[in-house]
Length: 226
Image (cartoon, rainbow, N blue to C red; front, side):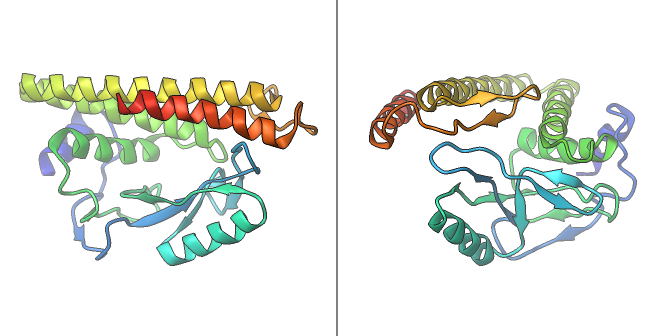
């Protein structure tokens, strides 16, 4: 871990400061749970306003039970919701972030990516712009992990990491393609900022739309399993 911190500071110019010098066991598999929220039938992000961080497209909970309870309530109101576990997050320099039991046991490439990703948030964070913040930190994390593995001279590990990134990229493109197909099924449009705007009136009956969307997701799952 100390070697990763030194690499982040010296090679990636990330603000390591006093972060990741201490260890904390939170006695659970995830440090927080997040609940993205969306409109009924087709998901669209629901913004939540936080102090300092601004508007984010998810709500975080330190209790899985509380996250699931809120998700059930919103589902009862017709929203598409899910609850996802989060292994790490950045306090953006307000506190000294510790090494957590939720991610310390990951293989070297994933551990390096998580560390560089979270430190990337501390280098650049645009209040209210979730998409940019995550894209920037993901780029820092992945490129940082590549450079770390190359510097260590571990060719085999570097090749396996690159292969995992390619598989992830293929999956993301598959999901985005399915999302585009769903937008066409429901007649949704995008505004000038690229945000999805749900159609006020469905172009066909709800049953027909649900059958068409089911076909999109079935194709997505079938390809993913191959």
